[in-house]
Length: 92
Image (cartoon, rainbow, N blue to C red; front, side, top):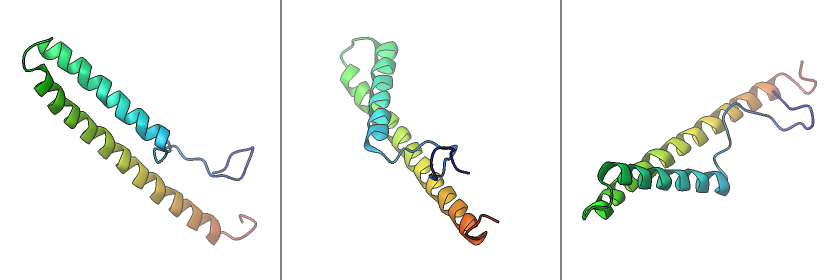
C-alpha cells in the first residue's frame, strides 16, 4: 500500500515513534490528570497527592498504549515489506 506522491508505505496506525507525538501523549495525559483531580476533589488538602497518583496512572496507560501501537505498526510494516519484496521487483 503506497501513496500516489511517493513510494513510502502508508499505514492505518499513526506514527507514534516521533518526539512530537510522544510529547502530545504526555501533555494530553497531564491535562486529563489535572481535570480529573479538579473534578474529583476540587482544591482540597490532598489534591496534590491525588494529582500525582492520577498523573502516574494516565502516563502509564498513555505511554504503554503508544509503545504498543509502535510495536504493532513496526511489525505490520515489516510484514508488508517482506510481502512486497517476495512478490518481485515489478510487484507481480
